[in-house]
Amino acid sequence: MKTMKKIIYAFVLSSLLFSVSSCKKTDGQINPLSSVTNNKIGAYLVLNRTINSNIIFATAATSKVGVIVHEYKGGDPIDHIDVFAAPGTTYDTTKWKFVKTVAYSGDSVEVSATGADLAKALGIATSAFKAGSSYSFYNRVYTKSGARYDVNNTGTNTGSGILGGPTYGASFDFGAYIVCSYTDMSGDYKVLKDEWEDSYPGDIVTITAGTVANTLNVSGVWPGGSGSIVNPLILTIDPATGAISLPSAGISFEKYASGTTYLAKNASGYAFACTGSITLKAELFQNGSASVGNYSFALQKQ
Image (cartoon, rainbow, N blue to C red):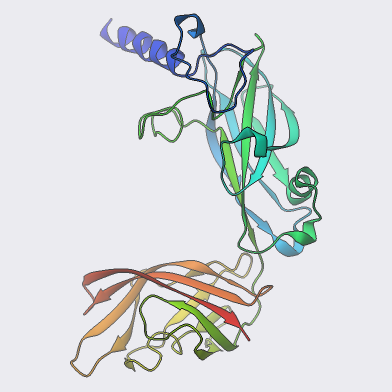
């Protein structure tokens, strides 16, 4: 009996959080708790899995991003989903561009879009995409009763809310990141940024290919001319997306006259052959164990 009460209470709370009259605009100004007349059974999509979040620049027209979702069982039955897109991230619906309508049927549904779908919605050609650009897709749910729900009228409360909280697993949006496949990027680069200050903006550094395929030796930046090389700082590049990684144990790359060494691990970033840009962010450790924080650099091929 206690379990049943908990379920009922949880459902009532959920209903309060995403209830709103279907005739209201979803312009970010609605508080679904503003009137008791708004309270009713709501609806939302639950994430099953993410299909993909990268659009490959060279094959942008056919590259697909999206999610597999199912409706919250016990909610207001869903009829269809309208998908919108916008550059970056924004809840301002005036900046959303309509992409497509997806009918809801069965136990789950795929909500996805190709680069061609995105470009058409934005009124641009796929060739206008730039590697490193990000876009957001927003799912607006329409129920069979005529109500509609999106990120603007579902509510959240930091950590346990419908949006972003782990409890519900809601899927009202998904992202797309423009990436490009990797080819050898060895050559001379201008330093745009180096937070570790082994190099400085405007410096020209030489980057060489690693000893195995899809790797780059960036010792020309870290340690550059500041310290001596312990081991070459070798980045591993995902050939499909340009995503950068380091070995899980990291690489001890720099040593000073004092004997202090620095190790880089937990890397993220991209090496985009189509734009000649390399960005790296890594956590650095003094003498292999004491973290000194995260530092990044950005390079542009000359």
